[in-house]
Image (tube, rainbow, N blue to C red; front, side):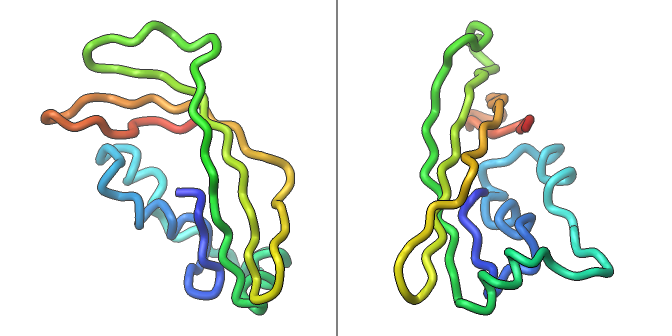
Length: 117
């Protein structure tokens, strides 16, 4: 969800589409939307697309202060560190992103049900 391909992705939301198999239906409906605006992509997104940049995510999962797990629901905190990788060199994307994630069990699978920024 946090690895992006600005050369081919219209917006960051395209990454949610790639992660669809790990999302509940309700989260997918909220996140897999066309987020384009009349003004077009951000300056940064356009710059990355121009440079054929991939934005690679490295995610750390923690549980400091999380509610207790149940048989059907797990809460975690995720810190996302992104690195922009153009044709030459790499650049750290600042700042890191922190999200609170709720994961639920559905049909013997664990799926991401909520992401709060």
